[in-house]
Length: 114
Length: 114
Image (tube, rainbow over all chains, first blue to last red; front, side, top):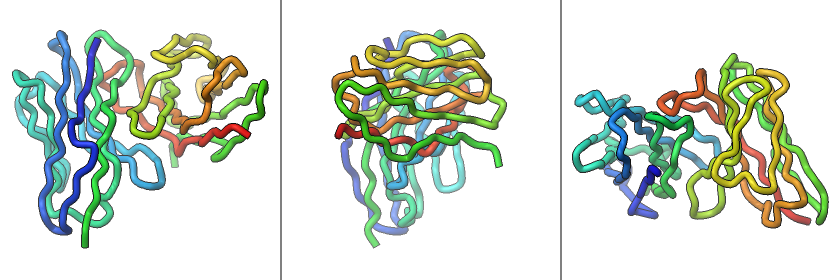
């Protein structure tokens, strides 16, 4: 079974600075996808970024980028120029391969200090 | 605008009572999912449906039931057999039932015990 581990329960960053959230996963599959979701205080889950395992190039969405290390089974999220609106719980998730479902980590609570 | 609508936003259950959480989507997605979120936990899959009139148990299906009579609708019933139902419930959908597909989420329902 796939597992997803987020080792940082909480992180904080100063506004305009850069922060990196860690995620590791365990799988025996070669074809899969990885996601970062954001859950602000409103509780709605919002897709931040998606990475296909077969692509070596790291995904980027504006100020959000990932560092995907397939051999190390690591998938970290970098947030550049942090803004107050980035404050949220961030979940790393694994999907694809032979499975229909997403497997989520326990989340990292990000605080952005003005 | 297309999206997922969950209702009600807050729900209270009495002992021995069954309650039903509504989930409706107008995204024309084939697959729909129900997750449970507890404090300090990631999302755990309760049930999922790949297509109308079909659904499968997720990781924590005991005490829950679902139906999928229409493509747009995937209601979740929390039965009296679920002894610890207090949690935040999220409904999601994806275009096709494949783990690599991004899932779109509703705003959630918070269920509490009276």
